[in-house]
Image 1 (tube, one colour):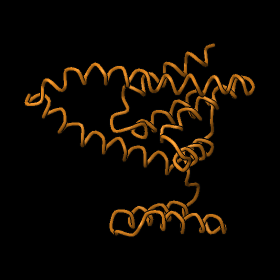
Image 2 (cartoon, helix red, strand yellow; image 1 turned 180 degrees about the horizontal axis):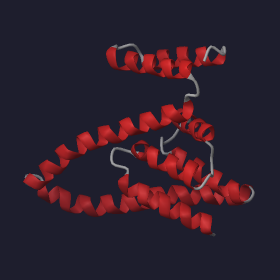
Image 3 (cartoon, rainbow, N blue to C red; image 1 turned 45 degrees about the vertical axis):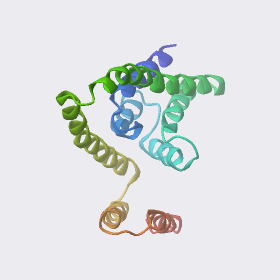
Length: 181
């Protein structure tokens, strides 16, 4: 039962902080799930992040997978499934409820200076959260200097060129598959 309460507490809090999407809170999710609760290792977290990003459906699928791992850490498959459901509900319900209430007032304050200031302030905040996520995920996934170099090269290509990202990801995957990295 304490694991379920920890999942509700963690994902309920992250739900309200996930400005810009669920990936914005990955550093805190990683810190709590890997180093705080030890539900996953660094490499397992990186693996489930990769799976959640490539699988069809919402990118927040990682929450379900962390909840599943937490339940599996405590007991068997039924507990793991319940952990995944609890984590998902805890991530969705608080933010959805808050957004419903805020939207009721937000529409009425279209010309308010306060609304304009909040909207302008959220853009840099979101960018910072996404950059923090990138740093945490590269640390969790990259294990030697070659992997860090590959990550840096791919990042530069993504930022500096208009090459289709799927092409770059495919090449990086092949490099990993053949054991170069």
